[in-house]
Length: 249
Image (cartoon, rainbow, N blue to C red; front, side, top):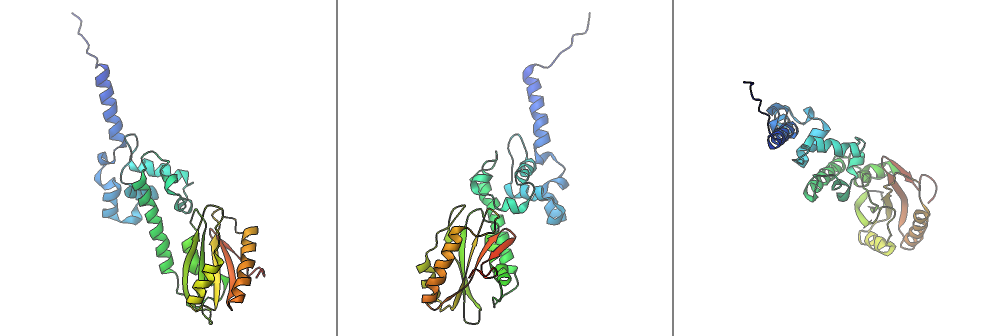
């Protein structure tokens, strides 16, 4: 009598396939020393790749891809450039399957901490003596943003920085200045001069017609209050434009 062969039925085959796939995509199945968190604790952050660090932040993937695969997908969307990734919005992150509001907030929080760290570690510049010195002080707050913000630096008669603050936060292309409010704050701080700073998320550092018009308006209004608009600086990524350096003030 011929030996009867027993073949697994469809449900058994599907179960085996699912188990194998899960085993390939689940980080828990890896050797402990190769898992991102354990590797971080054993060997330090420097031993991890960027995608492994992002995987630790997002914590988990989906049923079809693990956290590292998801991190790799996110990095690829930013062309593997952290500067580009730092400008991703909540909606940009949530476009990825497996990234909800909590994971998006975690990623954005890391980049915000990085910006604040850079600002805190910048060399102290009690005196603003050039556009370059102003940029070193203010650029960490603006260069990686995906929307426009306008800041004002308030200076005393010795061009020493009294304070700096954000005065507007707008859309992708423009912000609207409240000249009266800026000068009111300058007078309250007994500032003798101010420097206006805003960013261009597009990366184009050249001033637009609105930038030129607002600069002229602020120069004239500040003069009436015996306050000097020393400069208007446009931050565009790692470059900038200075109205003062260009002789436009």
